[in-house]
Image (cartoon, rainbow, N blue to C red; front, side, top):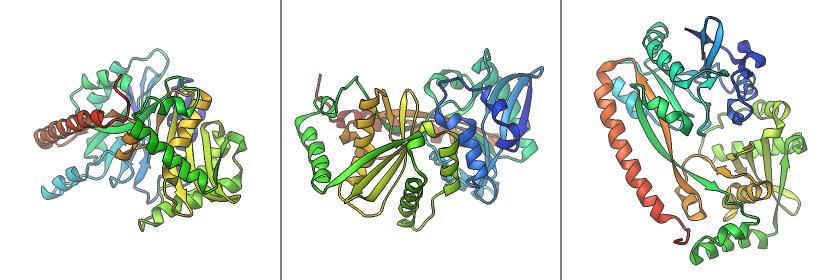
Amino acid sequence: MQLHIHPSTLELGSSHWQQYLSLQADPFSQYAFHAALEHSGSVGGESGWQPLHLEITEESKPIALIPSYVKTNSWGEYVFDFEWANAYQRYGLEYYPKMISAVPFTPCAGPRILLAEGAELTTALTFLQQQLPHLCSQLKLSSWHWLFAQKPDWEAAQEQSWHQRIGCQYHWYNHEYSQFEDFTARLTSRKRKSIKKERRVIVEQGIKFTWQQGDNINSQSLKEFYACYQSTYMKRRSQGYLTYPFFSELLTQMPEKLLLVTASKDESPLAYALFFVDDDTLYGRYWGCLEEVEFLHFETCYYQGIDYCIAKGIPHFDAGAQGEHKLARGFIPQLTHSYHYLAESGFNDAIKAFCTAEAQQIEHYMQWAETALPYKTE
């Protein structure tokens, strides 16, 4: 078996990349997504993200493709390791550059090890583990990080000697509801009334919503969305990671994966939310508003997403990272798993203790979060 490194998504090309994808692969595993990041300058250059994809072959036969990036900072990852970087600095060691196998700026679990037909995940991971010391030495990397692994891969990942970190997100599930009220009927009376009130406040202000998907999304709407997206960051005195050409290229190359929700008042746009969608999941990703309106974020990013899942029969809604306020709105706490290799073995005991303590905190939080859910006791 051999490990190859590819310093560009574009160098690999679409046909080569796509041979590793099943028809069910999520939007963020697609060649078009990673190519748009590179074409648009959202990665590369001074972004802190340099594409360096890993490919495993055996006698020229494809085994696995692992989309990866060399990082010179820890921004845009959502599995925070700033404390690790600080520890390295205190000991006079360099934590950056490091390598992550992840989707830039996208905290959604999914396939990170893309397998060719007939290839086995355990075989690919075992070979990768053997190669990581050489890879880190050759490229002067401190570490390798596999972020937001999909649940079917957890068992194979845990067979390796990597450090495991867990996290918590909040997801909504569609129990074959035919309308929004079928969902709220499962909630306690107090929570049901609270959601009804939030939605009523929006309606009473004359705010209306439209859904545009695929080729129905026009360039003007996309430009207005992008202005809203950037305004969200500007309020925090920062700038959005992603450039307008990134979104424009996605609209050209994979329009069927995009859903744009527009909130309007008096026929003028007020807020936008951009979702990704596949057969099984709606992914809430980006939002922004031109005017602060009470409950508008909840309606645009959560309730409209739930309405869409019910209308289209989509079973799962991943509304993005963080946001404990999602619990009260029927989103269920879910574990995330990430795996980590450190080239400097002297840190292993400390990192192991860190991961163990963090996992205990997350597990305690998950137990509490289950009790905070708004669903009626069955």
